Image (cartoon, rainbow, N blue to C red):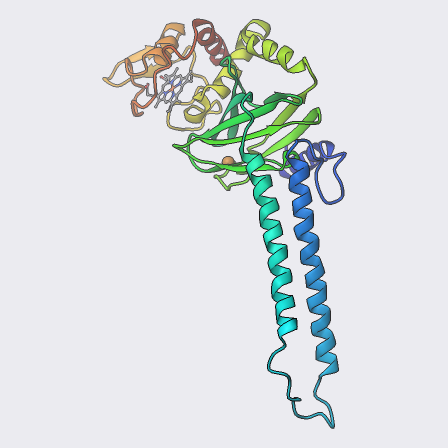
Length: 329
Ligand SMILES: [Cu+2]
């Protein structure tokens, strides 16, 4: 797909999810969105009011007190005016304190998840988001039930990413080596866009995901079905999903490009030179061994840095990955 095409396609995808927002703002799809918009609106209109007032007075004074024949010298002006000074000090103080108290209250609400929240783990990595559900299922989109408090525990595998759901007015940086927690309660079923807001490398603008808000009952059905993808998908398809969601994609390409590890393209069935001068044939057993005991045979020219997936991938999952590798001719 050409770049122009790609951008248009994204614009349309984006527009499709924005149907009910206002001219200014995307749709308010979480319980926190309304309070955030109201306080933003208040600060915005207060700023507009003072901007207009100050600029209008400035222009009026420039015209009225300009230098002209008969009025060459500045008039002597009063040194100060207590009533005026108190007014322009006390009114702004009152407004600023009001904004602080209101904002602090909204901030506390946004940062205090209810005790019964449903927890989803979020991992940011170059260049995608992964969502891990309590039953161990890993997905590339965030699925949540309607009207349920969701607590996200977020971390990054590499650099700083920015987790942003405009429709929820939710945005937080996700850092490596640390857990950042946020929560929300979705109040409208539908699909909304998730972005990364930190420039995290060449694939930054590809770091998209969706949050899908399910009607009551729909979430449980989705999770059940999604967790069973090994049974419902063809093995090679399931293998591709595992390749993307279990981290293999970070080190192994499927298009022949180099990376931390060898590419998977045309690996299966071919001869692989390994450290020590020998050659092995990349069959089912070799791939299985490479996944469970990566240090047993090191592919020539690579560092022995692949972590073992023993205990992290089930036999059925390894079989699915092998089936996927067979399709990469
Ligand atoms: Cu990112």
